[in-house]
Image (cartoon, rainbow, N blue to C red):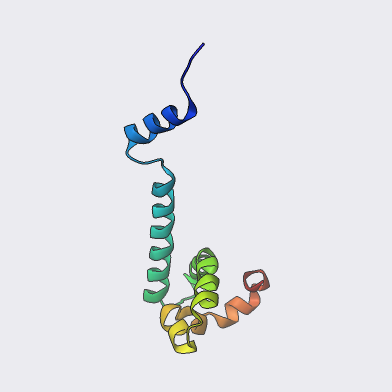
Length: 100
């Protein structure tokens, strides 16, 4: 039988990798959302990229909602951070599942 407790095993795993892995996953997700937001700011919708931009808006939806609820930004601030709300409003209306 082994006499190793869970604390020792956890310490060894975290020490050998330098991180538990959880922080790395969070960091990657933050980078993906940040990249999606940047792409949404830089690209204007065209007939060839509208679906891609809607997908990026979907990916950032939880962050959008949290930021709006927590920060109570002005409409100007919202549109500065998410300018595609203006360009894609008809496409967003067409995709009712995006709004709910």
